Length: 295
Image (cartoon, rainbow, N blue to C red; front, side, top):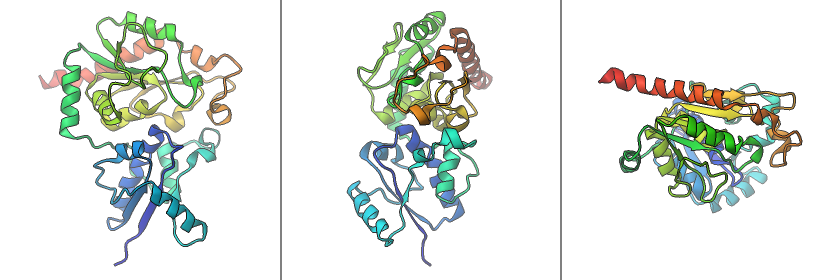
């Protein structure tokens, strides 16, 4: 019996979060056709996210992607190049990004949950790191894609100061700004998978629409995600508190991209510390309830 082969090419332009949003499609392909073969060609940093994924049959070198691309140009090979950003989803869609990506692969999702498969060693390391801190909450105030997504630094500091019972731990790239005063600085100390494991073992996530905001869905850690130029309809997850101050010009992410907002980022400055603090308190309470019931 011939097997249907899905050759999926994920380009270097994909963000880490975008790559995670494809994982529900891997699962859906195998549910739809257990005999299908999934070959994923992606840069090394994205392949790290897909390690140990049981639905992926092969992850060959990125150089094979050039061969695939050439053969697809002369109609000798079918290659799925999931460049969904060109569709400008925030402008033209009213469904989640994971569903859009599944549609491009011609599969239906029974659920849109993201999956990351961590090892026992990765989880144990995260447990040991966080055991030193009381009520650890992971924060990520920065994003590589656009500064327009960022909240005001003084409000991050006020948030941390207003919740002294929690230990706020800042993850991100080394030297990434802003550094939040009062938070434990762990920027650049952990690789992608270690960061995922830390988030899994934390009480809550607070941050902007970024890679770690999608990780919350994969590891089932409650999050508070601040949206402005991007839309929670496309990139939000239902278990998170998605704070969205929609203004007349939002969402604009598919128009401005990395260009500076000409209106002073009103969509982000409209989010108050009180709103975020209340959401964090509620999410932590929800996280602790099952633990308390088990005691």
